[in-house]
Image 1 (cartoon, rainbow, N blue to C red):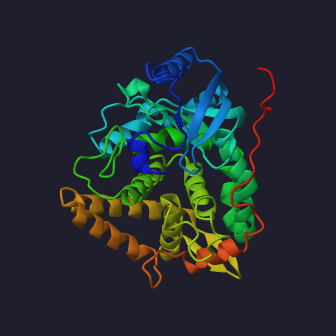
Image 2: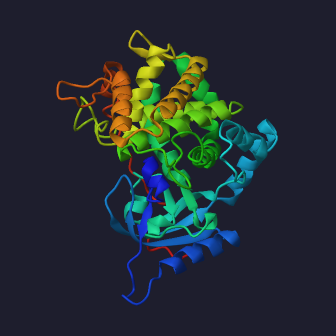
Image 3: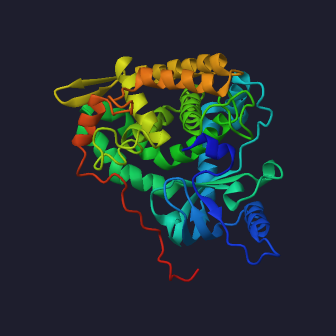
Length: 384
């Protein structure tokens, strides 16, 4: 997901509502209605308009979200059981970056697509983010709202991520996720989504509520570094939840970078999509640091070394941020570009290519859909 787009609140699920007339603007009414429904803890939240989501083109859509209040309570209880309370966890982020002054949970909610047509129900996008997705700038923090598509995440894991992992990993590597993230998938998704947003508020590549003023790197570079940073923070800061490590690794390797492999087996989408590039980068780092190995055609995984890999990546990003902050835009982009080329190979034209090992993995998964079909719970014609 693009970090710059998050900073401008133009992330996955930006909703552009058609103006009723040149004399009225219904967008604030739409946002205020959503805020009122959240305040009332309503379960059904309609979303109608022309949706321009990050992974799809702008298209008309009409849907109803189901806010999963039970899942919210389950996640809260999970935090209490393993970490005491939310404050214990978020305080670690504040210790990492004292600029984090808002220690309350972000307005980010687990939802399901009850019914819908258009990009909102395409299965390619995993959340909606307001208010700039309505074409508006937030007046204050209360305007910033996110909806995580729990059922789309669950669908892509069951139809693509887990089948790929089962096909390419040895039995020992499969054991951890089989007894960890798999039976707790929805709780893991919901917990990860909340702290993913918090991670975007700290560190040298923070983008929320605004981009660090010392950064002048390109959109693609900031998208890569911002997402890498918040993923790494998630793994490092919430060590009580090994499911988060498994979740990040599996979706980063078997969801984003596979998209486009059938069209371009050499590079898939690593040159156009920041999430795809991160998948190639992460595979290389995991492999080089001994977290991923290969034996008799099957991947091996050392999950302890996988966590250590994220600790090292976070340290790299902190050092990189300290090096570039305050430099000219050209210097910043030159330094970041060189850092990226250090870890992901390029072809003779300078374009990034998939690591050989990851390409072999994807070749074994060609029968598994890159983007699995998604079906909302109800048909559009169903009465609510």
